[in-house]
Image (cartoon, rainbow, N blue to C red; front, side, top):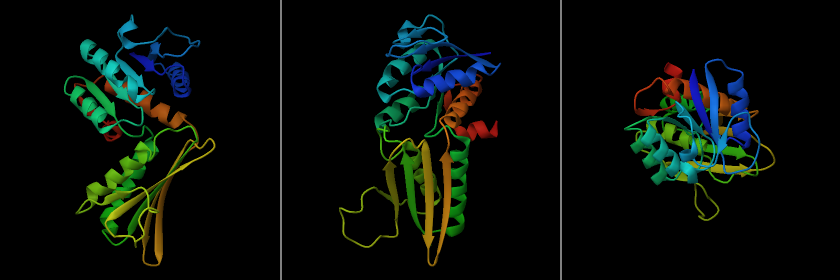
Length: 250
């Protein structure tokens, strides 16, 4: 049995996670962390230091601002962390990777199995197409999302760049520069509106033909299921940084 603490337990993702975990017999929620007010079927505290039961894993779907306190608690108590929040800065990512030298950490830009398959397919496409096609990424999310571009869009761009002989530049804004499109760039475009859960499209545009790879998330459950699977997987691991590729191989 894997004992899990949910950070951001009273938020939308926290409640989805709790519901999914309640239907499984290999893990349980032993507590939640949230600064808000609300009811849950498990104890809720406002900071990690207030936890009365040591968990095996903490799943964080809250906000990058709590990362420092989470890492301090996990490092002090040897607790694994599933870092599922989006919008981390380069400095925060460096802290996550540093913590993984002492504790197991699961870190990926997107917890969906489908998105990670999309990244793998994009890498395969680059191997076949080489530098003959222009590459554009379009991501769409709900109007409450704070960061842009999405971490998933950057994950996809990074996956593509790993397969290119020379890394391409990321271009987020074309209207400020009046010029033809250079070859060595990946355009990344963000759309925010309504209640779109998450849509990502990779466009390979060549001479007289276009190849499109896409993924649509119909609900937040796809991310929650991935995070719960990651927590059960992580509880059995030694210190290190793990991602969805490791989980898919397991």
